[in-house]
Image (cartoon, rainbow, N blue to C red; front, top):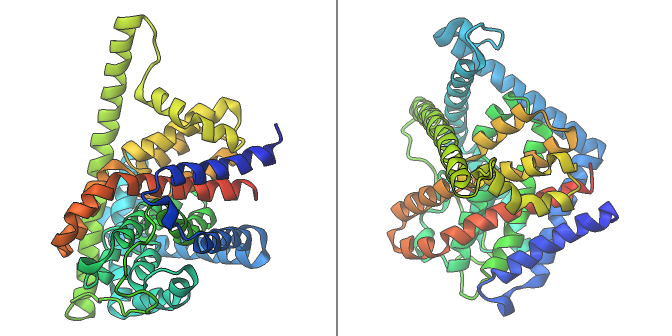
Amino acid sequence: MNPFILKAVSIALVFGVTFLLSSSKRAIKWHFVAIAFAVQILIALCMLKTSGGESLGLSVSNLFTTLNNYAEQGGRMVFSTLIDASSPAGWGFIFAVKITTLLTFIGGLMSVLSYLGVIAFCVRAITVVTAPLFGVSGAEGLCTVANSILGQIESPLLVKNYLPTMTRSELMTVMISGFATTSITLLVPLASLGLSALHLFTSSIMAIPGTLVIAKILEPETGSPETLGQSIKPTTDANENLIDALSSGASTGFMISGIIMAMLIVFIGMSGLCNDLLEKIIFTISGKSGITFDAVLGMIFKPITYLLGVDPSEQTAVASLIGNRMIINEFVAYLKMISLNLSSYSNILLTYLLCGFANFSSIGMQIGAISAMAPSTRSTLSAIGLRAMIGGTLVNILNTCIVSFLI
């Protein structure tokens, strides 16, 4: 069948699944969904098919490289030659050193920018346009934009004063935006692994309107948002001064790097254990070998890889990586992707498919963090958490479907 038709079907499939999961199909405001979808396509076209987009992508890549170099200056003081990729210590240890160095530096930098009001200004400036354009409240619009810069835990802090009165639809948008994006704090380390900075950045920006497309179908607005049509001022951090902000951000970045390494160790190890156990159990029962969780996940997501035009020899591998991201996390999936030596086309698609925090552990993280700021929202967050995680995955798939037409 014509590849163009198959890719069009993939987009229709995403909308179809989202519509089936909708809580109130008659309440969907299709004109706002259409506007958000059009903007999502426009961003992809501007970033991937114009000289301006290529220049911006190159600038982002150069910025990430520059930040990496600055981080290595500090890392070299602590880790000496272990910070260099050419070190004989081995990639596993170098990975740990690089992640710790980068996240500590980027965490401090982002905290300083937040303290100086730079992040709040950028987020609010974008929200002034996006909130009325997409028909969303100022609070959910601000959080959606912020998630492409900060992350799923930090962004709700900007609207914590509004969280207790948010509608179910607003909370769905807040959660999906957290699942569908990857913060700049993590984009820099991911780019340092060899992933395309242009595609990582494009994916994160496309996820802003993409979140609203999926969220407003899954959970249409049926209430009366407090900040509908308003531009609100983000809640700022309570750091005492610049040094306090730098120290606090660096500590947070260091803590996140430790969490990432711990999760990589335990999840990769448990993944291997569970795969071996399942394979042995299936072999004992039926005599069939090669049945692992990766293989099962590959079968579940394989249809979307076929529609996207992935080479038949790589469809199972690509599909299983989507499942890996959902069950474990994006870092594990990206590391496996790098090790598989897939084609350029598959690698680009996977950059978009995996670029988000949509995994089961993040459901607990979001419920815990947001309900700590607004305890009254816990029951709603628990009720919509799984659907929001699926929504985040659908945003990433929709991004990929659009990009597949352009590469």
